[in-house]
Image (cartoon, rainbow, N blue to C red; front, side, top):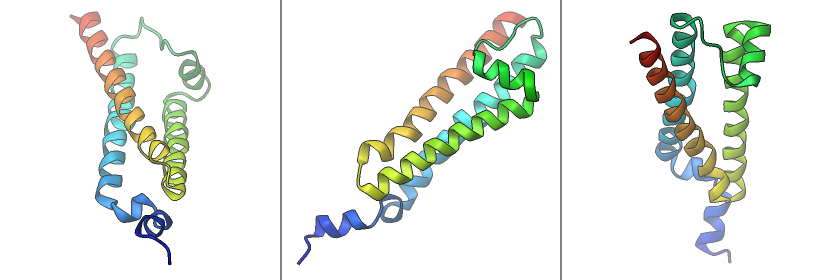
Amino acid sequence: MPSARDRSRRCPAYLRRPREFYTLWIAATTTYGVGDIVSTIAFLQYVPEVDEANPVVAAAIDTFGLAGLVGLKLAVYLVMLWISVHGARGGDGFLYYFPPVLLTLVGLFLTTTNVWLMWVATG
């Protein structure tokens, strides 16, 4: 007979604890998705003498405009979501938690940096 641990591994973490899963990904979406995108767009619009520092993001913006920024962020977000779901299905806690936590921390850092730089440049 399978142990309780074996049975719980068959059911992915996002199904066992949906509130936790959604909370993690709402935080990632808010900081990395919305915060960084909005603050980057504002920074690029209000401080036109400054260019995007990340060469990958700069190339995406140069090629596709602001849609390139959004598309690149969306692609990274979806890859990280896939890694998290894959980790949950395989019972790997690190792969489950790492992507949304990383995106949240990166989003917080980038949003804070953009807002601070915009404040310094316009102040």
